[in-house]
Image 1: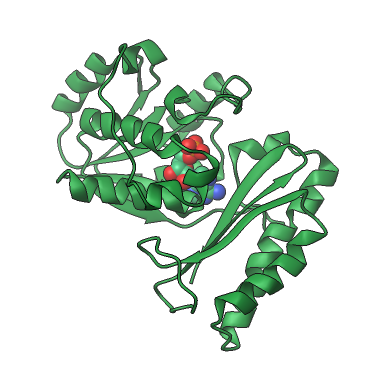
Image 2: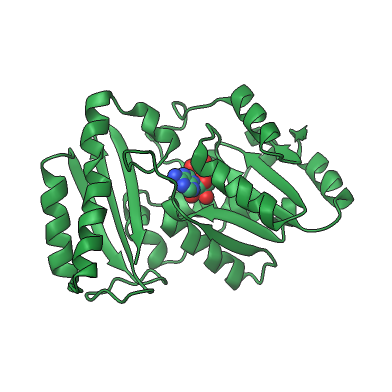
Length: 275
Ligand code: AMP
């Protein structure tokens, strides 16, 4: 495995790769969720490129940019063991110059849910993903359904800008207790983690209702609130949208995503279920 710190190294090394390239962008502190994307990229491509970059432009002032977990040495070992061919770990100076050209998330859907709570977040995400897709010239790039709104906006960027990379959606990997794996889970105390388990329980409740034929979003949302309200410190949103991220009032199987964001203690957690 080659570890590259500079974009020009990536461009040169990419030129020498033959066959297909699968690319997995991450912010590091790698866990089984990231690994599932890396494994899938390895199964479906001849070469695997992974990037680790805690991208400052997607953090809002006051968010956890400085505190975000960084585990460089462990991450390098994990990538090596997972059979990654090229690991790109740039510094911010390699990625950005002053007064950069901007990419904006869509004016409506980019500013609902996560975009409403974190205005500008997706502009930063799309800016860095555009750079990374161009650098890696990947045939396929792998994104987790864990961050569904991000996945939807990246897909739209690729569509709108006629980019060549296929965006592959990957299932959310959960801990044994049901909590979706996230680099931010390390912020949770034991007591908070217990309360955070109301998140997968609420999704499970929604799933059961739908299996029993309940399609009304108002009813599903109310039941989910009942599961969450006593456990979490702040219920930011529960939302039900179609696969293009338009809010709907009736669940349509195979075209629906149920999403939520909560705070447990000071930690903000998101999760969702594709129906
Ligand atoms: P991050 O390092 O948090 O930016 O995540 C990098 C990629 O891993 C994104 O495409 C995430 O959606 C994905 N990812 C994060 N957590 C999980 C998980 N628990 N299961 C599957 N994919 C995940």
